[in-house]
Amino acid sequence: MKRLTALVLVFCLCLSGGFTYAAAELDYEPLPKALKVISNNSDTSPQAVVDDTDNVSPQAVTGGVEDINPKTIYSGTCGDNLTWTFDTDTGVLNIAGTGDMANYSYYGDLCSPWYGYHGEIETVNIANGVTTIGNYAFYGCFALTSITIPYSVTSIGESAFYKCASLSSVSIPDSVTIIGDEAFRGCSSLENITLPDSISSIGENAFCNCASLSSVSISESVTNIGARVFYCCTALTSITLPDSVTYIGNRAFYDCTSLESIVLPDSVTYIGDEAFDDTAYYNNEDNWENGELYIGNHLIKASSDISGEYIIKSGTLAIANRAFNNVYNLTSVIIPDGVTAIGGDAFAWHSSLKSITLPNSVTYIGESAFSWCSSLEYISLPDSITCIGSEAFYDTAYYNNEDNWEDGVLYIGNHLIRASNEVSGEYTIKSGTLTIASRAFFSRINHTSVIIPDSVAYIGDSAFYDCNILTVKYEGSQAEWDAMSIGAYNEDLTSANIMFGFEDEEDGSSEGEITEEVSSEKTTNEEISEDEITEDEPSDDEGDILYGDVNGDGVINSLDAAQLLKHDAKLITLEADGLTAADVNGDGVVNSLDAAQILKYDAKLISEF
Image (cartoon, rainbow, N blue to C red; front, side, top):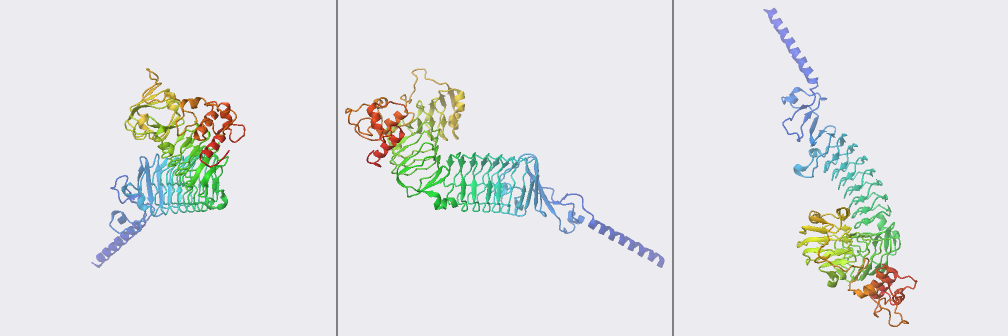
């Protein structure tokens, strides 16, 4: 009996020892690879995965025993052929696959699928094959310090890295062509950025509030610097824009308080509102000369001290938006030949300004450039102009003079500025018209048909927006129509039934057509008779010449300047007395300089020649 009992005890001890050993072995045996703890979610929902490198008991998987510090990985999809995984232990987010990343937003269900871990993501690895970085992809990932962007990526979406406050550097490959609006906004630790040759445009606010950004290298491929791109980059000390840049947006470098060196190429034709205000360069009094702030050959700002007559210095190429917005007593401005662009609001609200003559070099007039100049009654525009912004001459004395409107339409020279509500049915644009200003026929809902001469080369943004145009009769060919520059938001025009090579079979004209050809260079606020246009009457007294009285009517005013300018443009030929009277500066040549002197005399800026 004792023998039997001893055998039973030995057997039990052996059995007990074997179980203990087996349990110990199970405690340390690695689990199968990547067992899913949560597997019933959709493909786009994060899934917790137990990593195969941890020593976790089977009870951790089955839920029988509390987990022993498992490492968790979340995964899902972020595009038609893209997947992502995030490791909470390492803080690494991996994105792989082929094609475009999905676009996201900053709130609710529209956020990126990993946004719930935005405070834990430290590193992002994007695999080769991914072609875009979506909008708001890494928005608010304030712990992110490292990002790998492969050469397969061609665009970085809007707000992609917005508020990634710990990101100190980023390498953008030369495959990227687009940097979206606010792409790196608020990356307050970002110290330097190099934009590759592949990029042509930088979106608005792209590097706004990057307070540590001290160095920027912009390649020769960039043509546009968007609005507020480097706004409030307070560590930035210098910037050199390449010769490829033509456009600088509103407040592009505003409040860059350390920016003391700025190099602008002659290629720049558009400088937005306050583009360089409150920079170290702007605030340095030594950079202002005679009340003017220039950067290179660009007039950026005029001080409020300027009054009376103002002569823009020779060599100036462009006048920035709102350049004279703090100048209130300007009565006359002379713009030299060579200036190509007049910025938006550049001379707006100058109630004392009476006349303006733009040289043949000007091609661009910005929005509201001369608006609300209530005394501006003489405006001279050259044929060189190819773009006129909306309301460029709104509420000027010229605009408000009913005599300057023909059949409800305002022209200045060969440029159609604005159509009134009187325009209805079919309207024929005047022969010889070169440009149609932005918003010229805006919301003229009774305008159903338009005849456009083949002389028109440019139609501005929204020129025919919100019109009910059913038919367009174009006098040129389809090839000429296709070559015409037509601005945005003109679908009511371009989607209409377009007839090419149109001619009126009855008499070559149609209702609303103006058959008298306008001067290719100039116009005035007063009607000029046909006789005055074709021939100047000689003085009755051959021996008594009144200098400045070009037309011989005994009065020196803007009509004389107009006659002189027409002669200078070879539209008319002045008789001998007219030529003598026109040469008011005595240099032996009759040209626009003499016209400017006559206009100054008429404005009482000078008392004699």
